[in-house]
Length: 345
Image 1 (cartoon, rainbow, N blue to C red):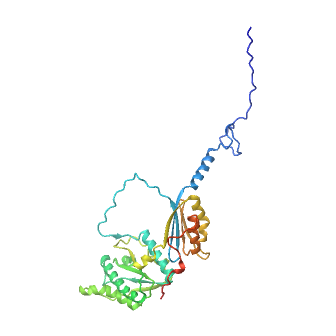
Image 2: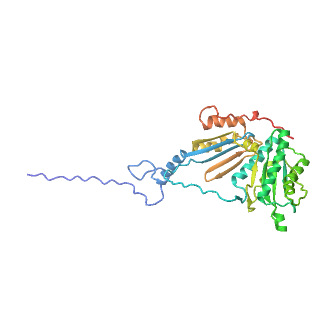
Image 3: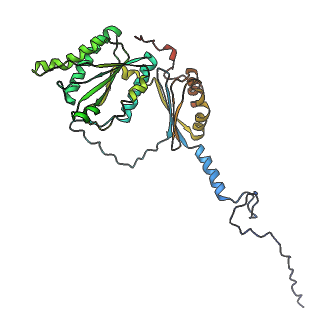
């Protein structure tokens, strides 16, 4: 005799129904028996993205100058593309025509003005030009300017053992609109005191002597001299001219000035985004004194800070501890007090 099978029915488990709303739960409860955390995928991805961004490599570039100015700039660490094919740059041919100053040229000129202002405290702006009789084109006038600067160099080398200057070429717009004559003139900024008689004589000799040898008419020229105490701002307004189409260089400076405005310390540091944020928000605030102004620019998540007069001890602290993580010997010691005091006249 067969015994019939006994079927045992288990009671049905009653569970809470899953919410039909598409909005994620903000109570920290899970709708799945296998999960014990938030099921908000967007929140999880955002947390991972934030964690990843803090470790993103950032390159910090720091430069200091002899008169105390400090520049700090950050930008993403570049990734070289090994597959990119590079071609040779085009060959420069013909006469160079300058249509306004480049960004690098403006930066060098204003930096030279700030150097004059901080070291010499005052400057002289000398403007030399031409009259109706002694007009010259761009190429010939550059020769006149070279002879003129050689004369001033002989005087300054004898008096000061150096010769600092920057010059900017410009076309007289009022004269061009009024008379239709295109006349070039030059603004020369120098921190040295040069007597007006020497300035006038040197320019007249540089312009008129070559014309006398060729039998051309000459005339007496009178350069203008203006004292400038804020040299950086004064030279900056002559850097905005565009559309003049000047042949040759639009500006130049002496070798002494070019060497003086080079940074005495510059270094790149590869750091994380979190480290860059801490330096930006907290540690860089102590680089400048309270009475100094601070200029800063933010672009695409990167930042650029300019300190007109940074504190020497604070720079040492930032370099030795914040950027390197331990005390190290700097490649180029920054000692603003050891700068040779130059003579001012």
